[in-house]
Image (cartoon, rainbow, N blue to C red; front, side, top):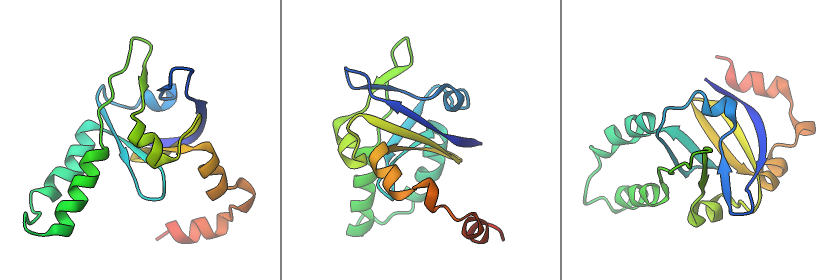
Length: 141
């Protein structure tokens, strides 16, 4: 399970590193793609394939909306190559989609890691505006 909030910055060469506590739970290969809500999503490669491969096998090649959605997802997905220190360059397209300039927030969200621009995250998830009663009501069955 991924959990926690971690704040980091891109280095001077635009490289990033996954926080150690989150990286320790990942397999060697992982996929980063755009995600709903204005963030990026990081999943172990096997989990990304499990989630999306089964669904894509049933897509209708003639359904324009389904094929467009598939193309958009695949065009944003990448398997980064880490250097010996665990750093990698985030592709420009993903930086743009995530609104990322320099500062990042990594958020463990149970089965995935989200990567947010610090500005966007702080705007959407101000700690002073969190109402835990609402959170529990929304999540408890």
